Length: 294
Image 1 (cartoon, rainbow, N blue to C red):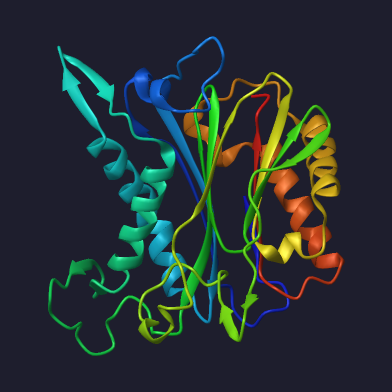
Image 2 (cartoon, one colour; image 1 turned 180 degrees about the vertical axis):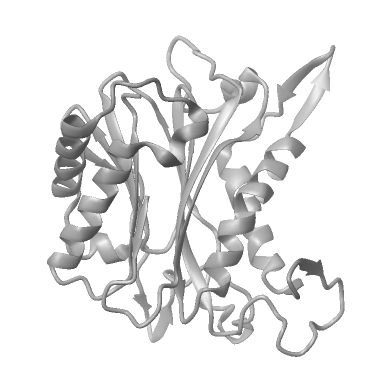
């Protein structure tokens, strides 16, 4: 993982890597439509990766970095019940889980205030100067949950995730850019962030959700903000990451608790960020590379 301010005055991107952020039954994937033909079950460790691209400030992206994975774990837990001493997954899919998570985050952005810790406002107004984010501050998000047999990707905005599989680049999300809908501008890139109540008719926080079955041909997964994607295309990004991983992979044992400290993946992320900067990216540049061969 590497974040670079680039040509911006301030760094407002944030990123998160949380190994085993949720531990649920292997039956978690039984009701998921992307499970394999043989019905392979995942292990109970789910690993969380995310990149948040803050707009007009870092308050919203910082809040998401610290809290979104906790909210997602809570949402997953509410969809499981214990039957006959065994934890089962209710017949709900990842779409509803992610939509609920992002909706909660959007509401919490306006329902908490900060004084060194987060406090629930309830129906009260925040103390002056202590709201989570000013009304013009917001963030995009690309979230990837990795298990032993699948990826689940949720995207709001123009931060994206791309998978390198068998030497080919597979986009796991689309960039939500500003669109013209008649005479109205629908802002889909500014998606998470409270305080922009005057924009609620134009801003949405519902993510695009994709589930994909893992394959033995999977090589690496790249999450990045638009500071990278604006200047490097998907195939080139995957090629750079793959070459870097192949040349610098460690032969030492590597555990899930070291997900954010893999030197080969960190080197690959650093190279991608430097290439983006060298190609003239004018935005903050953030990248996470996940070595799937490990």
